[in-house]
Image (cartoon, rainbow, N blue to C red; front, side, top):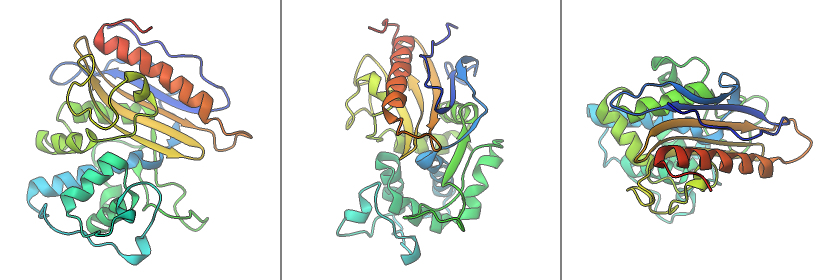
Length: 279
């Protein structure tokens, strides 16, 4: 399998990158590209995938009614990312709350589902899948003070790429659970990072909208981080990828060089899965 070339990476950034082959029924998992794949990074909203796994498991097991309305405890009301906090009627169903998390990384829907499932239960999802350095760690907070957990989620490029590979293969809990999670992630409208170079319609790429590519991904953003993890298939190949960048201690805001590098990685992935050389 041909390797995927990584661009020059800004040394001021803490990177953790891994791209693996995800072709076939199970995907070989062979590494196509990597840079510090075992370094732990803060991963912002990416850990919400583990919440979606637990919600999907409960729905498939019949433990939760998909039409049940979520409850939003006052202590977990947050704004910022998402739509629910701006909606007049916030009485959404469990299934629609999960869709909001997958589509717009909705913080309020995330906290409602976390409260429903229990934080400790969701924290246990990643270890149950064999991951030791990756997890959802806390509720979303309007302010993260020193007395709170240090980050909402964390992870390594290697484990996050493996998570996406296993979701694509139907190996996370069950094929039905994996399919539910991927269906929610299919609606993700944030194509500003690695996915920017895929040239997909940000609002409508559930199907093979361009060059035969199918993307299922999750992103995370903070003032000092950008993370994009995904499962990308095309006519020539299928990959799972994770690109995490942190610059928490840098003197400058490094989002410009980080996003440029992510775009360059996306160009390589597009060429790899479509067989069409990058321009």
